[in-house]
Length: 182
Image (tube, rainbow, N blue to C red; front, top):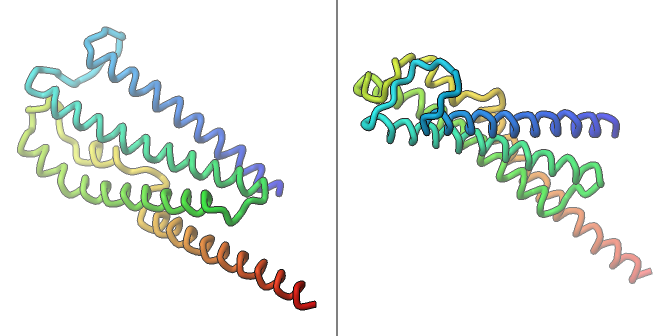
């Protein structure tokens, strides 16, 4: 159980750190977009014709980042349930399924961004005011936990927990029937 508590501590630190950094980063970006001078040097030039693509791009990054922070929150909730020895609940199964879907969607977005962004930014070079660097833009969608394998792992884990829950319920029913027979 010490390892479970250690994992819980690490997940809590990671979750609150990512949550705080995300809020700080996006508040700073909003301030920069609204024209507040924060003393930060940027190479991004804003004009009326490049605001919409920039807003869409930053909104997609915000959604992408928030989904990963949310999946970390769900993992934190599952670890807390495991500490309480509530292993095979519907909430744990649902959390694993949602986490798997988030990681699979993240993987698909990452693959699409690596294939679509180069064409989009080569055609609109200078339109949105960013010098296109393929590695810098496509690496925005890479995350250390991102990937097909982790997404599938969480989906499989949710199915395993669902099967184990059914088995546990059947074993309880059999035990009750055996007690009534005796």
